[in-house]
Image 1 (cartoon, one colour):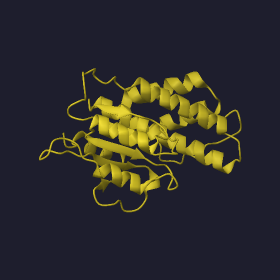
Image 2: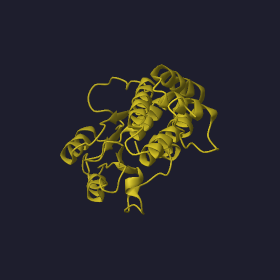
Image 3: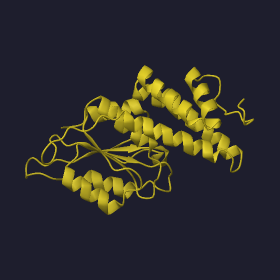
Length: 225
């Protein structure tokens, strides 16, 4: 129980760090939130910190928000901001190279209309730990801009994030998967990876839908090229 009288529904099987982080978030204790997030990444690395500390706490705040009307919105916003800040601080800068990268990078983008970027930010940070080159385009990338970026970069893989079924666009995913570039006889195309619950169901042929961050990392670190 916190000083505000609220209890976040974390459940029993969570790391101790989740409880401390939840208490700090409900108190709106930004310095403590920042300190605990940084300590989790330093102790466990990005992948484990995201999956076992950040994500369970974010989900608990979301459940509390959903069950309390408009209360706890400020808690969710503060926690999300500091999670994003922590992930970006632990994203290594891409190596500066001249011209189009070879092999192509991994392109990360939310589909049009999708504003939830935190899972992509976690993936971006984790890819940087593995020294896999990536380009992050963030929230709600227009379809035309996404297609133009794929043409310009020639990525090894494209990750499309959709939090809700209303934003997931199978035709856009298929269109990107069908894109080709390069000289005749040696044409390349991107691996298309679908992320987020919006893509629920069986993906279309040629499109991949990893179930976890670790599975996505395995796919992307071994993508062709």
